[in-house]
Amino acid sequence: MHLELKQAVGAILALSFTSSVQSHDLGPDHDGWQFRLTPYVWGAGMDGRVAQFGLPTTHISQSFGEVLDNLKLGGMLAVEARKDRFGLLADVLHVRLGESGQAVVPAPPAPIPGISVKARASVNLTTALFAGQYRTIDMPQGYLDLIAGVRHWSVNTRITISSQALGVNLSGQESESWNDAMVGAKALYKLDDRFYTLGMAMIGGFGSNVRSSSDIMLGLGYSLNDRAALLLSYRHLAVDYRKSDFVYDTRMHGPGIGLDYRF
Image (cartoon, rainbow, N blue to C red; front, side, top):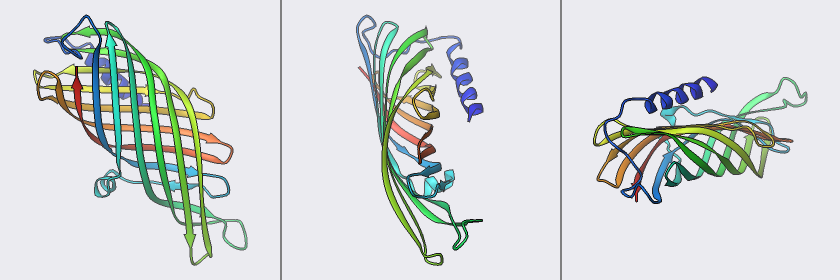
């Protein structure tokens, strides 16, 4: 995971120092406030592990091919406001995931070695990033922004474990919410008059009970006119949160499509 993050940050920095040919700004008025609004949908899969009070840890894994076969759509909205070199960013995400996985329960009558049985973890997740940003590089061909802010997480998990052979039928539900400070960078680079690339990489893990977190997004935009563009992207959002018997150590990933509108 750390290698992927370093590669993403390196790619963003490389884009930002490329030679320039044409300006790309948020709006026509360079002296006043400029805004960007980006609603999009996300085909999110999930892998990792989830646990809650009284239930064994459920391990979940879903390949990219399985994600495409059975997409779980998530809705997202990014809002950006900027004046001169300073700006504000809000990124809100809501997804509902229902993934099959494996859990280990004690084998009767002895608690060892345990038996792997099928399990299902349903996750209802809302997370929102609120951040400030500073434009360190502003060239006609693109820009580089440094970002610092707080991501809020609200998670509701339901775990169901059943096995007729073992006589096991367990189910439970639990909710947790927390805040996590994050820092990172985002950059845009124009390929030509129509196409541009967009990337963002952030790391966290500074909040209470948060061991690590990261958010990586890479996208390709196609300008429809001076204000609107179609955006195709791939996003990888990971967090490892543990509090008492509650464990939420997951990675969500998948393609997205949205409309990038500037005014």
